[in-house]
Image 1 (cartoon, one colour):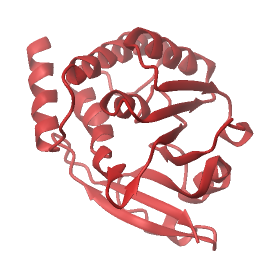
Image 2 (tube, rainbow, N blue to C red):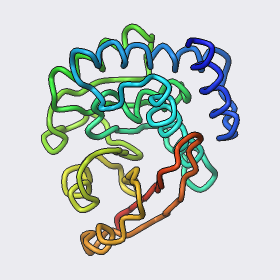
Image 3 (tube, rainbow, N blue to C red):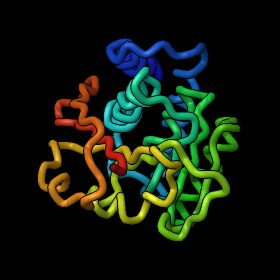
Length: 214
């Protein structure tokens, strides 16, 4: 099973054309093992099969990485809003050690897992905030905030816009293209980029929607 996981993750990373430093894949699998272990008690994710977790969690998160570090849009600080079991924040922090990631999660049980994962995986670039995002006043503002499971785009703007530096971006990982949600964005927010993602071993539609204040 370990070999199958290794092969599946390695093949997916190659398909995503990611150039990750040595040891990254092992740390990603270490995170997967922690997630699977804690999931039995804390119900961190509905996905139980570890092979499915690789595509639906690890590779799905990593597919975002090129769009965080490209020439058009580079970030150094990232807030993961409604992080849950650490997705996409922990895979991104593992794959990109120079990126400072703050995981924001209101559930105490899930935040406890996030703190434990930070310690066990040795992630100095990760911090955890337990609380509602709308009540969070960070010491320093973020270049971007990302979410994978946080309500609608309008709600994401409403609760998370205060986290951003001027010119910062809100990044939403979505399934099908959220045309209706885009139409309901506040008048002073607009689409900066919309990117269709191809996630290895995942047939479902995935779209990355990046929005900014006008």
